[in-house]
Amino acid sequence: MVSDNFTEQTLEMGEDYEGRVIATLVRSDKNVPDRPSILYLHGFNDYFFHEHVAEAFHEQGYNFYALDLRKYGRSLLAHQHPNYCRSITEYFEEIDRSIEIIRSETDTDEKLLILGHSTGGLIASVYQNTGEYRDQVDGLILNSPFLEFNITPWQRWLLLPMAGVISFFAPYAARRKPLSHVYGASVSNQKKGEWHFNTEWKPLNGFPAYLQWIYAVNRAQKKLHLASDISVPVLILHSDASSRPKRWNNIVLKTDMVLNVEHMKKFGRKLGSDVSFAEIPRAIHDVFLSKPEVRQTAFRKMFSWLSQKIEIHSSVS
Image (tube, rainbow, N blue to C red; front, side, top):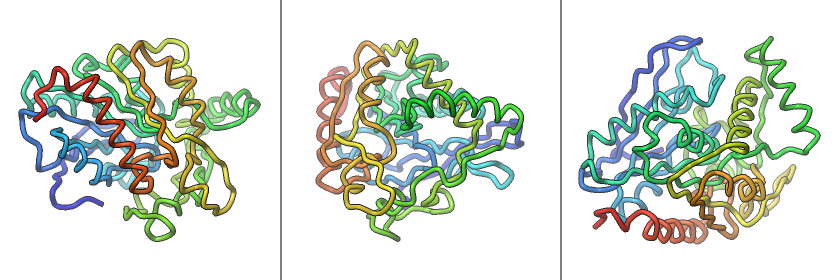
């Protein structure tokens, strides 16, 4: 959850195949016009509650905005299937609107970067290839981006195409509880973690992974693998190791147990012409939810990269 230092703006997105659609732009009350800005995009089964990330950026002279995408978190409506989409490009509308708002609230020469976690990193990467306002974005920071499914080759060959076929006939067919309860336990302060969040918006076992969503993600990943051409600087933050424990083991507190970090390295370098990597030892999937000393390493490496790649032409003070 976040404090009263943030305000929420509901963005009306019209209607889609399920009815009324909204997104929610969360902004820090510490924002001022003459600073560069960060737009945060959350992952799957997620929403913005990372106030400490906003504070870290403020300390370095950045404004901070976060977008709860349609059908996630603050933007999830009663008639909607949580986290559902048929194409990753559905999210472009609220990203466009958010960029318009941020640009209207900041000086024209200030920088704007998108920080995307996991699925948010995938969405940001696709947007930076084809989004309407991609030329308004000066850089991407990707926190454990979802660039490939963490499954075996035969599952990738068989199951992902099947998801497309099945979802064509049954649009809401789903894989129930797609996330390990172990990961949820590792981050929630109700279990073995540090963080307090709304489990109606971020259930510990995860929302259903709809096959239509899986198929949409797979199509987006394939496009990036084959023909990504991001022209702005990209930083990829990732753990130094992945793991797949079936039950609780302390290794979950120091590895990425959701995605394969080797996939991030393999496909991350294909995103564009200026891609940097920051390996964070003992980090979990959401690098910024890792242990305090680990996330401080992540912040240090990220701000070092920013000072080299972005701040040279910025008025950060």
